[in-house]
Length: 594
Image (cartoon, rainbow, N blue to C red; front, side, top):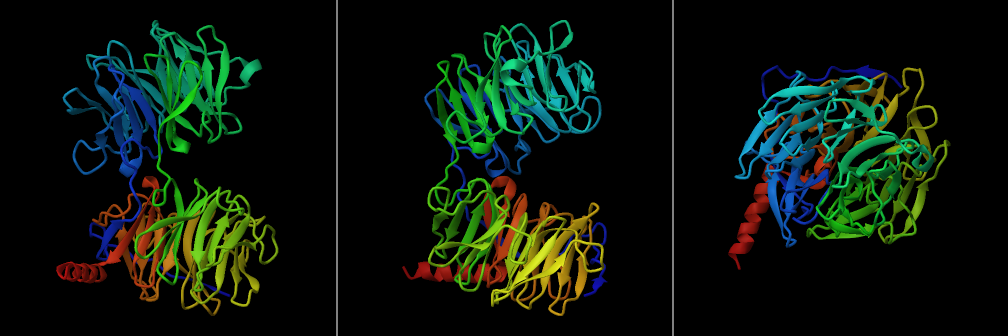
């Protein structure tokens, strides 16, 4: 074998990148009001109404009034007041809402008017990654800014700013502040995951480190969200040193106890990103990893206030997707450990979840289909590839091991349409690419090493109908996209970079019958045609209403592209404009005959 390096096509600076014309459509179902996908925070106003910040449709804030009715307060979008990367929120005593977003903090008054209090930047009175907010009774605002210069800011009601804590590991300094809380005595609490401690600043400005009852709960671990109740009890969300989620409580006498451990059962948590206590002393927890809000009353009873819908067509973390020869779409969900199918009529069904099959998923990350309708699922944690035939029977396709036909740390799987399958894995000493032909014979096409044909760490792979294979690999912090043709010759078709025709991290690839290559690269979708010309299908400069954060991709036999929008946990499709227009015309004629 030999390597051939080709320069990626350049785009003249200032010019818009070439795009392909088509129509984007959302196929998955949005979480309605009263349900939440990846909630990031909870808050309660002076009237006892509950507010939930979640990631549905780019971020939104819902309100549940005291009668249990849910309404929308704010959402993402194109308007000047739209939310942008919502993170946390808080109320002051006058009922004004404060939100921390990407590189800014804003206030929404009682008339619904938004005001920006602090903008993005690395200046002393600017923020880059505001991670927590809390307010004093007099309206003083406190902001934890986590990156790149960690600090805790104070904004007084008259608009005067001060830095209460700067970068460092001494008492009164912070390295990764993730939570803030105030008690009725005027003490400010700061959770610093970087130094694994909680500090308290008293009303006189004196800083101390909060003691931990080591005999009861061990080391504090990595504290995150904080809140307090009227009695002075401190609640702490975060991770243990083994990175297991948990909730802790410190009573006013300084005694610690554990309220919740990691898990999905009622009363367990998977990263409690926000907490608040209401006037009755009940604790509300934004249980992000379980896509729900939990409530713990003063008797210690847990209930679910709202959660994500999990019926067919709803998603909470899709990882890969595939289309079979009939045109049916399959979507794999890593967090939910299940597989869903959307038929050609748009009907969703669940083919497998943890309760409906003996074959378990642990961390399913990749999926493909062969011409016979068999599905292949890569399970990274179980170090194996499983196969599901058209009749629904599951079997082990590639077991754990290092021999040909076995896999260690598998990453991706792809078929070329002729029955040949390709699997990438991490191996024991680096990347490896294996091929299984139609006769069931396994061969190693490439593996890590120092020779001219060696590869680095491998991720996404895409097999083309002509027998070519596209592989994304990286080594020494340099990434690239390469092609292995049927004659065994390797070609570098995209080097590392941010221009069109360059790559940083390819999350998924697919090819079609016209020899186009589709790939997801960070926050964009690129297309390379048979002549080597690059196009932008989705991304910041594409001018389309496509995915906000594409994470994987596939394409069917008609050139319809299906994309997972990772940050919004949804599935979209892109239809070429000519096909979309033909479909619309056919629909109009059909409806005209009725």
